[in-house]
Image (cartoon, rainbow over all chains, first blue to last red; front, side, top):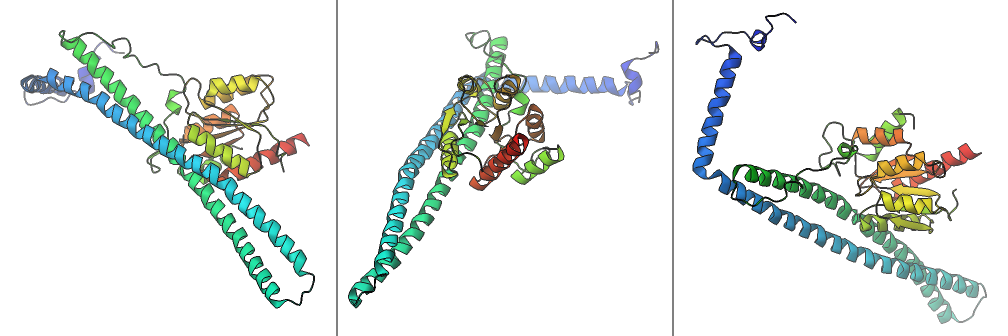
Length: 229
Length: 132
């Protein structure tokens, strides 16, 4: 370090007024701050902040409502598929058993053609029943899988609710600090406790194109492969 | 093929996802499944003994899935337990952190039944090879 090392040295271009550019930046920031302060005071800054701080809990309640309703809907669907899947399995098992029995009976030749006809129709129906129940069950599994939206959207909502809460606390703190009329509350709660692993808990990625985000299971697998797993 | 009597613990704070994973496991033939809603509850169930496989979410209150995994690997009784992470966390650093902590597999949500089946089979295959 030389004795002459001052901040001005790093940016010593002289302005027409003879001020260094860093002095000018400070002047300008000061000016902008004054203007902002004046206009905000004119608008009633404390009133605006108060309004925002009041609106946030309302937004949070609405998000909580969305989370609650989607959870209830997902639960209803899962309850229905839980009941429907065994019913389909029962139908399928019955059809298979009857099919087997009719096939055994048909091995004995019969002279009654009507009887044979009815037996053939029954067999055809049983085959269809087996096929359709299998397809229905696959659809029911698909309906069940689709309920994973509740977990994913729920995580996003939780995340936003958390952000809103933080914002609210900061605004409340701002109000406490600058408008003594407002009762002190939540001052301690304002300190969010972020754990060591917090930066690794971002919830579902809503933009698969973002940097450092894997867009598919294949990319997860490729990354793990490259790590030797 | 793994023993269909393998005892699973499904860890997720969303009951919807626990039910989905439980149903998928049942469809794959694994009917011996228990659930836990966070890492703390999971660890206490695991310490009770008997579990042979853990399927865990990452982002959960009280104790997250990565911490749970680290606790499992640090516990003499549980350290060998296979752990499959099934999570919406999809950052590269997440996958690397999970791999370094000793996860046996990583499935990113939303996933399909086929993906879960494939990852489970792969883990069982590796375990059999290691055991043979």
